[in-house]
Length: 377
Picture (tube, rainbow, N blue to C red):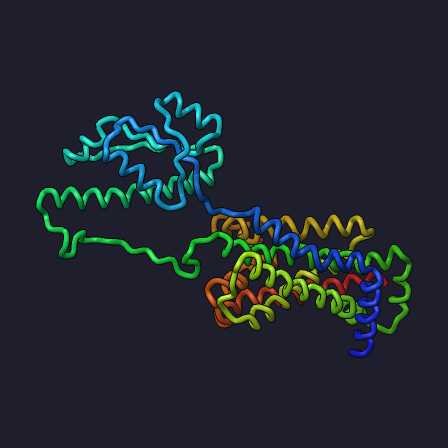
């Protein structure tokens, strides 16, 4: 049996080698997609264009502005003199936010009253606006603490011995630099491999049917399960090469390191590939034409992987019924694996539920493909 499966796999490999243009696209496309998506998808905000409407014009107001100038979050690009000018700058898109320091700001600080400043934010892009508000809030809180300590010192209160009484020191584990690329690139690996792997096998059987060579397989002594395995092997090898290329590109181009075990990552990636290739084979077996198989492969790989895997939208934020449906998407489980190994160095005992889910999906899809292929003989 093994020899017959190996011969069928060798025949598939020879067909792939003859079609070298398709083979080149299969190998180059994942790396190209990683480069494009990796640079295009970035949730980091740097140098947000900020306008400052300073109506107080005091040293205290300038210190607050200097607090915004420090770091890379904001860049002061305009000094509107009125509310109307600030509105015009926001309407024209010349600034993304305007810091309004009202008249009497320094007097309130000197009198020990709460000084209120206003931040006008362009909310057309809600994601960027929320991030900008978070950055501004952190800057204002830090500056407020410094102003409070200075005010107490002026009043003769000692601030050396354990003051302030409460200080929060935040440490970010697993991604201390808070770079979105460290989170995005492992997710892109899952998305790209799912799309490419499914399309790799989506045309294999239906192409044989359209070319009229399916009869050679029908009259062969191979059983349906052996035919499916023989079809799977060469594409699994090519997809595994894609895994190595994409991970290497992620390391070289984006500097994303694998914190955990690379052999474990490769082993679980192979399981993920089998699940994705199994979905493609099932589509190829039940599709009447190559065009139908291609369309079904795109729909079955792209939409669920992007929308239901947790790559963009958190699974826990979805309705409960949809959360259950996400368990049918291989990328939903592989994302936990690849991000866990890349960022947290997660070991196998922590990832076995996801590995078991991928094995179940692979077994079910390959079994269904073999069953459907037998019915068409």
